[in-house]
Length: 108
Image (cartoon, helix red, strand yellow):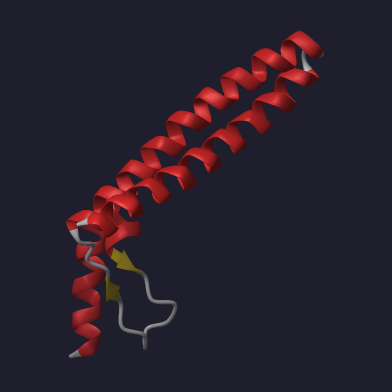
């Protein structure tokens, strides 16, 4: 019975492959039971805001870093400063948005 349930879950997993990371975690062996993570609306919104802020700010930081790097040392400076700006912008905005959303969640 457990084997059939696992097969059914794997079939469902193939159908919803685009949502795989947030819904179903693959078991590492056949004996493990897959888990389903259900997010509340507030958790989902917090994740979406954090991801959007991180991606947008990462691109903005990479662009600004590349522009500064090009002005200082064209070529290599563009690549290095673009990477640094993208990483800093993405991580900074993502963590800042999580802090802001957690403040709003506490006020409710």
